[in-house]
Image (cartoon, rainbow, N blue to C red; front, side, top):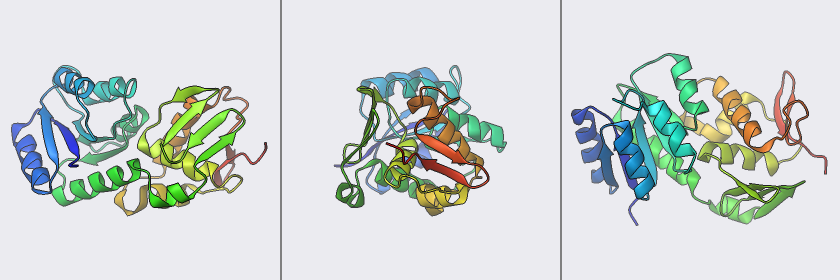
Length: 231
């Protein structure tokens, strides 16, 4: 079944170009030109991906992303004309899965879309792994890509889940930032290592009960991150 992508940008020429190119590859597309319209469409339809511009009239892309994340785990790629690191990190902090800076190459856009859609689906490798991993009262289902803490569902972005799955299925193994970028973001990502710290912090905010006494995702100072091996 064709994947459906919502394109959100206030520049008609960009929407037209993205729509034409993606539909040539077999995707279904829909579009919105401001933040309110984007939210209305996300909450009333089922999309497999959202390409979301940061600079929008009314609600900007950061606020749209934040509101979407309150109710949905749909993968989001932020599009920004700004090159400042802080803008990119802010986008990721509010739940975006990736970002691209304008002007962008349409071939790279397609590659990012394919990569994120592939990771958001259960892989054969994941199915062969232990399907449900439980540590204390944290439960990670590697097949359905769902997480629960003390019986309550925890909403994660695709990248956050990928990080958690990698760490929890290799408990006690310390991963450097470089190794996490290479394993989770692979060749598609051209950003810096602070992105790993942002995602780890977001994961901790969602699954840790006390940041002063971390229970699950721990830091080996000067080396990297690991998931506790203590039962």
